[in-house]
Image 1 (spheres, rainbow, N blue to C red):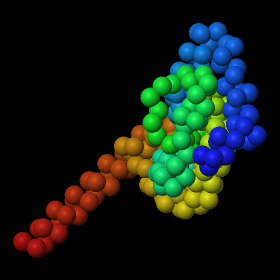
Image 2: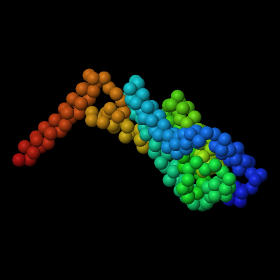
Image 3: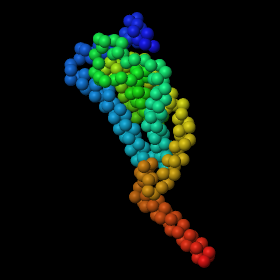
Image 4: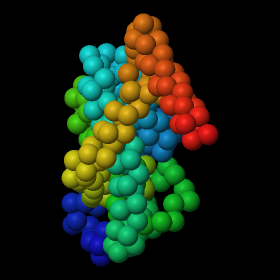
Length: 240
């Protein structure tokens, strides 16, 4: 892999120079904006997008079952991103591809101090895993997420910290984890979301209820506790 990185005829390197060359011609303030957006901004935007989708789902769900399934799918998004990063750890250690600026000294590097390996990009992996899982849960929000993930990949190459194939590899890894493990995740998360939806204490995390419905759920939970306490007292009396 390192040998390919040094080859001037490699399309990966040529595309790296084409995209990173834009940083040399851009104003200094624009490079600083891309640096912040590519390093932190887009990750934060993805988190806000998932939270925004959750807020919309819990308000507009027609039933508790629909809300539970939707929220379970959304809960899988950050879990998929975290799992994809864990999977990437042995991949990086196996490939051991140096950062492009270690091989090509004339790149415009916007973020200094990167000492780990380059393949595959963690940022691309995280954003694409979030975007794909979000797309499965909600097409409209997912399309926005996919756009942000593509922009993240462009920024990583523009900043001179990744080859284009590092980004493509991250996209593939994030997509694979989010899609292939989604059935297992939904089978585990949906029952948890259903139980939470029926709870009078944390049900608001799954679905926003009207006042009367919310009061009925809380009242039912209290009655259940009261009946349980009464039954326990009766058993103690009989034992005595």
